[in-house]
Length: 476
Image (tube, rainbow, N blue to C red; front, side, top):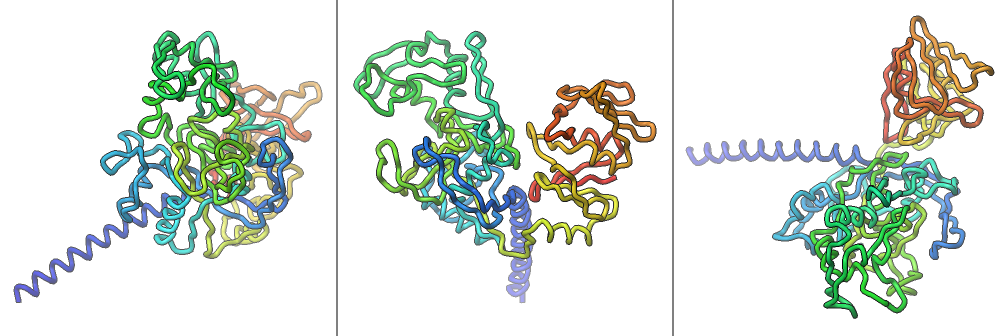
């Protein structure tokens, strides 16, 4: 009798513990699914460049919507996979785990087989979700975001090119590439610091850091590596200082350190190459003429050119590389409305009559329960949502005044609220009080765009952003 009682108690305790594990896993599931960003189909997609990165790219239609993780897979996430499956660890880990303080950094030294094994393991934990690697076309389309078709833009975060101040030693950049670690080394050690060549024809010789490498005004690092031709001196990758820098996975940063692109995707430039499922024929280096998996986005080790969203990198056929990681793509197989019309029809039946819903790059909107079409669409600039001022303000009951005598001035009034915004100025005035704008107003296609949150909140409305559907929800 006592044995049965003890057995019953143990069963109850085990059930409670298993229940706690299920709850924990459910919470983790939410975090993972919440990080998946829905990317719209683009049937007319073409790569900007061909595999030589010089000629015009080929067409690669994207017929269906897909999901891409906002973040690269981290060391911490990969460690959970290793713990459950006994999969082999990356070669820079020690004592069975990742370097201290790098849990939120991208996992590196990943092969195609490693990444696929992780995706299969993760897919087994979720109903209706099939995790996988993105194709090269899916990656480039998502990296370009709102800048697709704009040949003047190189980087996922917009038009900002890295810049280096030769006097102060300060590097300005929106992503992590080899100019970042080079600038840090000059600031930490100084140009007179002696580096020793420990590899290559010049092994055993030394020179100063300033003699070994230099940084240009655009952040380019000279003599970082020798990718061809006769060497007349040693290069940085052959030094003891590089060996120290590249230990423990190299000079990576947390996956959310830099600002995301217009779709909310982080590290689409730099930090670690993203492995894709697309097989290409290598055009350069040791792999020239050999089939390999395409990698995209550049890394902490790469030049800024390799970090452009159009640069087509070459990985390995199925062996790990010290600067390559991966991010998840996914297909959702549950109930899913794919078209804007279906989404809006569902919204009409679900949302209250006090909401205005606008979708980035779409002219159609749901305005307090009714479908309306604006002549221009809301867009994202400088990682801020910008909406047509007149369309939004007037639907919130405000009056918008523009005068030919003061073309740079936008005047919005509602009841006892007066808002004055000047085109191109990061300051606004509300009832005479000066306030800062996180992004200045601008004119495009003969329409004035203003930061949505500022305008709406001053008119008494609240604003929410749905990253998954790229919708702005304004509630009055």
